[in-house]
Image 1: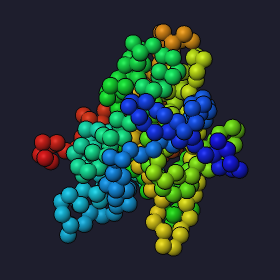
Image 2: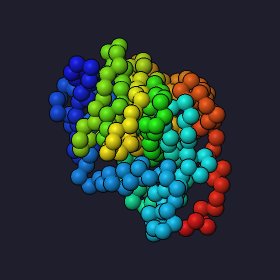
Image 3: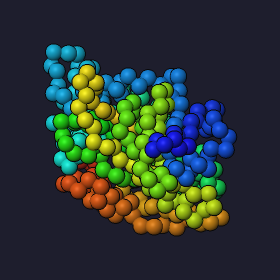
Length: 308
């Protein structure tokens, strides 16, 4: 739905494993636009994710309890903290094995809930698109069953930097479940950039490039929206902009797939690693071109058992 230069995403809620939209005819516009607002379930607590997003870039405070110390000090953790020097963004990007060690328990609980929502949404979209359920596990690298790669991202936007907030890009995976509460997000819909304002009490769900590629031969196709964050400016008395998101992605050692027009077979489009390399080079244009490609689990610079 369009209002001036603002796109108003259709709203949905989860009910008994299904997506229920406020407008029953909304789903086809949702697939075309590539995003929608998802009502946050009553049992989800965003406070731990908000605390992490507001503190992860600060130095660790040794005067607080161990539980609260784990919300800070991430700038010094190689492989999960990224300073995007061409943009205002600094963020954590972390996979499940390392997240389970590094994050506070309350944040990990919220992460698992967000991944559960993303899997439910993925199944709904595969069903609506008309893909044979016997293909789902293979063409999603097991994301539908909790496999693949579950990335979690936490972003802080530094208004003191006179640079764009975040570059124009499409997410690389299948489903993104995003929490944000300040303006700045824009998406290219219907040929022009439009504001996507936060909707109080709702996540924003994006479809990603792997899902777009998967459905391009089907009568019902899914679009992955090009989106960006405009430059954030300093505001006295207001917190810096932040966001956190759960991403369902195929692993780098798997392939991208495309389903046939009848939804009953699939062919490969190439490796996910090649797809990610091109994305990293074009999007961020920095030294982190191998993000998501190397096996981060094998490269953990710590002993998990020693941390517990």
